[in-house]
Amino acid sequence: MSSDTPPRPQKRKHRQQKYRREWEEANQWLDRVPEDDYKANCKACRRTFSVSHGGLSDVKQHAAGDLHSRNIRTQRSQAPVSQFFIAETSPEIDSITAAEVTQVYHTVKHNLSYNSADCGHKLNQKTLSDSKMVKKMTLGRTKQEALVKDVLAPKAVGDVLKILTSPPLPFSIQTDASNKGNRKMFPLAVQYFTPESGVTNKMLDFIENPDESAAGIVALLEQSLEKFGLSMDQVTAFSADNTNVNYGIHNSVFTNLKRKQNDLLRGNCHAHIVHNTVKHALDKLTVDVENVVLKVYGHFSISAKRRESLKEFCEFCDVEFQEILRHVTTRWLSLNPAIHRLMQTWTALKSYFISLGDECPKQVQALLKLNRDSTVEDEDIVEIYLLFCNNILSLFEEVVKSLESNRTTCVELYSIMDEFRQKLIQRRDNLFYGYLTRQKLQRLLPHDAHMARAEFTAFLNTAISYVEKWFDFSEENWLFSLQPLLLQHGNLTFNQIEKVATKLNLINKLKMNELYDECTTANTILRRLREEYSDAWKSKGVAARWMAVFKEVDVPNMLSIMRHILSIPASTGYVERIFSRMTNKWSDCRSRCSVELIRSELLITLNFEQTCPEFHTTALKDKELLSAARSNKKYSWKKK
Image (spheres, rainbow, N blue to C red):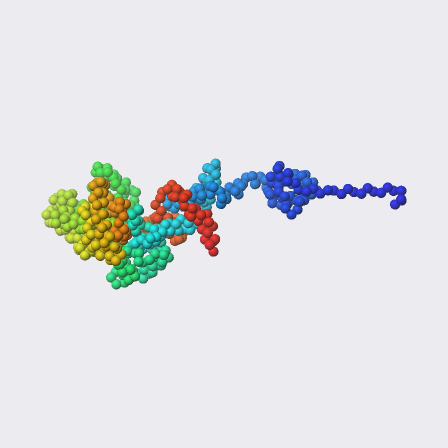
C-alpha cells in the first residue's frame, strides 16, 4: 500500500440499549431482569430476551412471535391466582371460611355425597359467576373430609367436654353393639342435666371393637373416658340393653364398673322388658299372630299381580285398599300397625285366599284356618285373635313410646311401669279383651268362646308375671323413692328429699341444713308456679318443671340432687337412634367410608342441633373454629 492512499475511516462502535421502565406501560407482560439491565423478562413466556441491540424494537419483535401470542391468549382465558387465594388480612376471610364450613355442615346433616357437594360448588361458581364470595370458596372432596374429621368433629366433642368438666358434672354412660357387615361397632354416649338446657344426650365416641366380652367392653369404656379426661367418679349410671354380658350377676359390664364406682346405678332399658313381655305372652295363644302377619306380607310383597288381585277384591267387598305392612321381628313397634292394617282389609284378604283354592299356600291355609275341614267358626277365630292382639298391643305400644320419649326421665319410670301393670291386671280381672273382640266372641260356639277367653286370660297372666319378675314394684326400689320429685301436686317435704339422698348415697355431698331451708323456699315457688301456669304446668315434663324452679330460685343442694338423678336414662332409645343414623350414613352407596369418617359425621349430626342457617350465624362468631378451618393442620399429611 502506497503512502498516498488515504487511511480507512474507523468503524463507529454501536451503543447498547438498556431496559426502560416506561416500556411496561404498553406491555404489561414485560418486566426487568434485576441482575442484567440489557435483558427483559416476559411473564407470559417465562423467559428472558436481550434488548441491548434494538431496545423497543426487540420488545416488539418478541411480542409478534407465535409462542408469545399463544401464551398471551392462554393467560387471558385463565382466572387470576388471586381469585382462589384469600389474604389472611382480607376483611372477607371470615365470611368465606364460615360459608365453607357451613356448606360442609349442610352436607353432613343431610347425608349428602362429598362428590355431589363438590360438583354443586363448581356449578355454583358457573351459575353464580357474579358472586365474588362463591368464586373464592374452595370445597373439593378432600378439603370437605378434612373439615369434617379434623375441625367440626373435634368441636362437637369439645363443646360437650367443656360442659362436663367445668365444673365437673355428673353424667351417665350409654352404649350398645351393632354390626356393619363383619364389623362390631360400639357408640359411647352420655346424658347429663343443666338448668339451662335440661336433660341432654350427646355422643362422645364411636369405636370398632371385635371383643364383645364384659372385660372387652369395660376396657373400651375406660379408654374412652381416659382419652377425654373424664373420671369414673362423675359417672352416675351405666345404660345398656338387658343382656347377661351387660347386667349379669357375677362378671358383667355393670359389676366390673361398679367395682370402680361403688355408687353406680343400673340404667337398664325398660322398653326391652315391655317388648319381651309381648314375646312371652304371645306364646300362650294357639293362633300364631306374628307368623300370620309375616306370611301374608310375604305373599303379596313378591308379586305385583297378587297385589292387583287384592285391589280387585277390596273394590268388590267395598273396602278401601291399604298396602300390607311389613313386620320386623326386632322392631318393637312394627307388629301392632301391621295387625291393624290386616284388620282394615280382613274381609277382602280372606275372600282372596279362599278364591285361590288349592293354589293357596299350605302354611297360609293352616294359619288362617282355611283348610277344607275348617268351619266358618274356625275362620272367625283367627279374626278374633287378631282383634284381641290389636287391642292389647295398643297398650304395650303406648308404654314403649312413653319410655322412649325424649322427655321421659327416670323419675317417671316407676309410675309408668306401675300404671302399665295395673291396666293389665284390670283387664284380666274384668275379662275385658276389647269391645270388638267381645262382640265377636258372642257369635262363637260356647266351647270355642270359652277356649279363646281362657287363652286371652293366660296371655294377660303371663304378661303380668313377666313384668313383675323383671321390674321391682316394691317400695325398696330406688325408683319408688323418686315419686315426689314428679312435682305434680302437694309439697316436697324434707323427709322425702332426705330419703332420695340416702338411697343414692348423696348425703355426704350435701349440706343438709341448707337443704332443709331450700325445701321450704322451693315449695313456695312451686305453689306460685302451679297457680300461674295451671294447665301448662300439668303438660310440662319433669325436667321442664325443675328447670322452671331453678330459674326462679337458687337452691344449690337441690340442684346437685337433680343433676345426679336426671342424668340417669329411662331407656336405651338414644343409642338405638345412633345406629339408625349409622345405617343412613353408612349405606351401600357409601360402603367405602372409613370408620373415622362415619364417627365424625355422627358426632356432627347428633351433637350439633342447629339448623344450617343457625350454624352459619354461630360459625361467623367462632374465631377459634374459623382459624382451625383455615389451618393446613387439618390435613392428615400435614400433621406428619
